[in-house]
Length: 406
Ligand SMILES: Nc1nc2c(ncn2[C@@H]2O[C@H](COP(=O)(O)OP(=O)(O)O)[C@@H](O)[C@H]2O)c(=O)[nH]1
Ligand SMILES: [Mg+2]
Image (tube, rainbow, N blue to C red; front, side, top):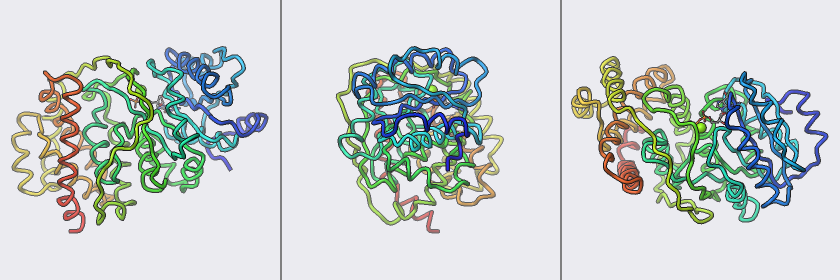
């Protein structure tokens, strides 16, 4: 029985034909100014690449700016569309749960999820995200975008290096938001217990949860879709990313315990998941970072949490960190050990809230340091810095394993 769909929506879905090749799912919460474009592009993509064999769903969180009305008003020709409000914990994860449930009701072969604040989305994105599933047996597809060097900071400094080195597949955008999901994975996600859907998975933890489960339980056939630039409503890391950070990183650390048998005693090579399609030659929009603000927030936060931080990290590491307390910057080596130490400590339920709270200023200091390190570098050169950071994570796995077992 669906949990995130209400009876009215279930009845509406039951009137649709069954067995679509593709469901396009668009979560929204106050995206009236951008959703129209995503809907138009989805309809075009469905017609052009899938012979119209699909439907567009909007799962809204109770927008007050007329998002749903905008969605409904778009003329999509013969392509059907349905908008509904999901039930459950307010958040992106609940919105996506409802889309998966709807896709299951419709017996769709695959779902493509597209964020409603996307401006660079194009019809061929659907083909790139769905074809690995429909034609090449993939269970799950993450996006592969060209992003500005300062965009995607949680991805670059935590999710990408940690997920790649733990689970043995490099997926450059594990929390990209635009995913392709197979029928098998839909089923698997929906069979997870209710308590999961009451956690941060119901919020912004959903993306890393999707990806981690696909890597650990999906049988290994995961792909990346070459999509070009991701242009959407960006957030300044020092000002707006706090709650998202806590939901994403809390979920990621929590899953390390669930799936410890996948990485604790297994040596993995971290090979790149196949990239489907040619990378278009595009230049992403620059993201502005308020560096002074970032460093100030970092310094103040590290100061405020110093006693706690000292308890979490080994003495040696604390000594290294003392200079960061003044500079508001953290280098890659120190950062790697901090992330590993925090992930170990996260097994203690009582500490979780404080751990995340105190990790945020440390993360800001890492981002500040990265910004300074790459200020004169092109996006490609900055990418090489991210890759080197991943290498360091990989080479330091022994440190993590030893600490985890202690
Ligand atoms: N239904 C619903 N959608 C949400 C909620 N929060 C975020 N979203 C949607 O999730 C997508 C990603 O959110 P966004 O804020 O752009 O996150 P970011 O791109 O990862 O920084 C967008 O389509 C949002 O509309 C929510 O509480 N409810
Ligand atoms: Mg966005």
